[in-house]
Length: 128
Image (cartoon, rainbow, N blue to C red; front, side, top):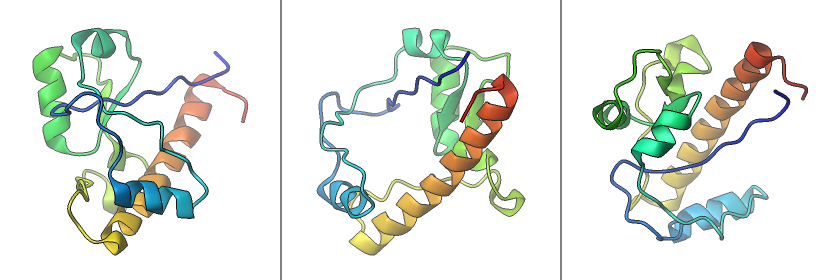
């Protein structure tokens, strides 16, 4: 394997919704265009075919496990990747919060995603 295919879905998502305006703004300020993102609901097909499923909150993992029972430990919290002091911590959805909170959550997610990518590169010997 020499690539990673990632996708996004939510346990309580309303399909077809764009990212929140503040999420678009914070991402754009960091050079990331998420304007084409649309929400979609998590399905059993997605779960069954995924090598790893990452949830932002424990409830996401619980809900995914209801849809497709995991016995392989492929369901993980995003915060499981990164600094040990943050492991097991829920990363809250900033929807409805002020822009500063969106920015802090963006930075937190980015830190954990970078740690996750480092682990995946190591695990599957991917080239960077």
